[in-house]
Image (cartoon, rainbow, N blue to C red):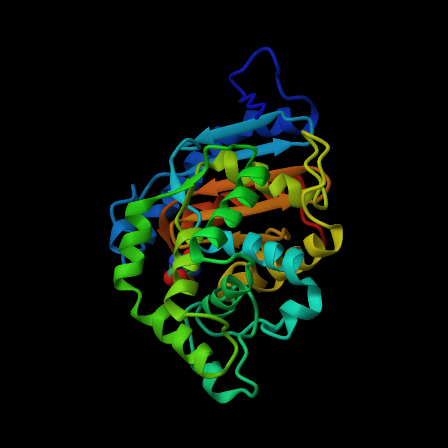
Length: 324
Ligand code: GLN
């Protein structure tokens, strides 16, 4: 990965990225103050120790020039950000018809780990692939003979997208979630009863918990987002990793439900497709221009990084990045 941070004088950023590099440290410190009103997620015990006022960002362009600020090197688990990419792998494995008979395309208005609509709305398929119920169904669609083989396919796909063959899942976070996931387990069994979920429930959950626990930095997230910004082709290698149509589907879900029940607000204030996770990560992108990774572990009451959302809204408004 070409990783030319603003401190790398041999590849100074040019144009808009140079303007961003100049302002970014100040914007980041202003946004960091917001962390004090948030809380680090603790329902997965292993996440509770994350530094609550950390804030980092990496913005990467199609020439491989990046600008970073703050705690961009902090390692964190992808959590719900990973759902975007397992959706893409399931689309590659089964096509649109195969996926959308098992999961819907609509926002819910409910919490990400809600199961209420699985009971009351016929035919009991999850509303979309970014809520837990949807992502658990997607995990069951990943091809592979065993959970191990499925998880290895997921990891290989994520490594290609992140341009880092050493990407791996965090064993402690995986075990911590697997040991305490009463709610996700309930959802999965309900999906099995509704005949949405294929295969053994615990096997499916293993694949799901493992992809949520894949450990990254802001640089990895920025690189994965860059592939989405370039419609599925990695501009740094020229390799097409995902069909354009599937990237279009993923980006649409990111706009309509990527930021939980604050997706509308984020679309209005930042105007960018984005996906957040409970460890405080946010993946976002400016189509045709930048992939962006952010981390800030303290979450607001909607479950998004308090300081991360503030930072992205500030940057997008100042740089006029909204796609709308
Ligand atoms: N692994 C987490 C869970 O299932 C992911 C949720 C999230 O990031 N919102 O609860």
